[in-house]
Image (tube, rainbow, N blue to C red; front, side, top):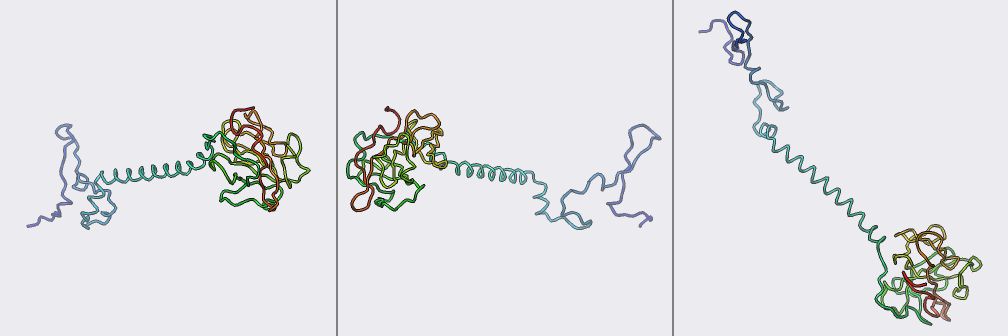
Length: 245
């Protein structure tokens, strides 16, 4: 029989003495204080039983660890992707000429061709343009890269061998004379090696205008054939790549 007191067990209080002795103040601690509601958002509504699937996930620290590990994996993959994107540029900067064949590269009558093996016609380049070409008959495409440039005929001077030019075209070895990298870049009319910033002026016989190279790029003697194609009339005038004088 009820004595007028609320029998709800959640509202019953326990009297816990302060420990200070008889007569000292005591305070009541309800079940709600001794068993605080979890901070799971799914328990926000009083009187609603918390679904066990959410409770287990919310309280299990292993789930939080897995989320952190997942984030670390994503960060690692992102770093690897970024690093991978740098491989191609770095590889191009360190592409070094390796010459195992020591014989002549060009000879009289050997046509100049592009990377697809197509012969170069007289009107192929406009003034100010350049193209990487190779000898049609060659010991290996990587052993004979040549820079073909075209400028107005009266623009050439300095140490340019004018007798080696034809219809405004001049041809130079693409292999840097410092460390053997490919001279792939350009700054205005100046040819630039990306490895150590060697600079060469194609309007002055590919003379060195900056950087560590100690000598110019060797010039190739060329002419226009009767069929209208660019052909060599001999080999490079100097040593291709590092070394030589």
